[in-house]
Image (cartoon, rainbow, N blue to C red; front, side, top):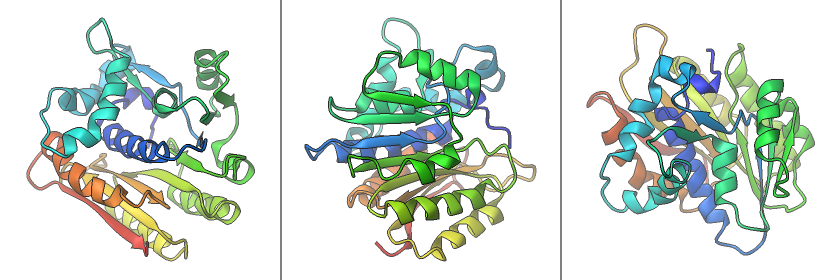
Length: 282
C-alpha cells in the first residue's frame, strides 16, 4: 500500500485518526504537569490540498470536506470542536486549502510547557518539517527511522505523554512491525499512552493484527474502528483503525458518542460499521 501522505491528507482515515489524537491531547492537558508527544512517522506537517497530488485523488473531499459542512448532534459536536477549530485555524482568510498533519495539529494544541518530538525518515519531508518548526523550542525534529524511536526515545523525561505511530504501509509486514514495536516500547515505558494507526484494507490481515495484540499480554488496548463500506472486491481502503494503549479513561465513552456521528457523515452506505472495543482488559 503506497501511503505517501500528501495523496490522502484529510481523508476519512485522517479524520478519525486526528479526532482520536485530539481527544487524547485534550485529556492530557487536564493535569498541570508537562507532557511529551513523540510522533514516529511525522510526514511534512501541513498539506496543501490544492496541490497536484491531493487533487489527483481528491480524497479529502469525502473526509474533512464533508465534515466541515456537517451539523453534528451533541455531545459529538462539542467533542469534535477542538479538532475542527484547529483545522480551521490554518485556513483563515482564504478558501479551505490546508490540512494539518499530526505534528502540526499536535503543536497547535500544546500548552507552553509541553513538548513534541517529530521523527521523519524521508529526507525531503524531514527537511520540510525542520523548516516549519525552525526556532520553535517546543518542537524537536529528527531525521530518523521512526521504528528505532520506539526503543530509543521512550520514556521521555516528562514521564507522561503520548507516542503516535502512523507508518506509511509501503512495505510488507508493517502490521507485524507495529505489534513488535509496541512490545518494545511498552517494556521500556509501560505507563505511556500509545496511538497506532492501521488501515483496514485486507480484513483478515486486520483481524490477525488484532489477535496478535490480544496475545501480546499488553493490558488496556482499545481498538477504535470506522469502516465506511463493506469489503471491496478490489484492494481498497474500506476502513480505518486506531489502537490506543493506556487510553484516557473517558476515551471509550467519547468514541461511543463520536463514532456514530462520524459514520453518518463519512460512510458510503448504510452498511458501514463503527465501534470502540477492548482487545485486552482495561
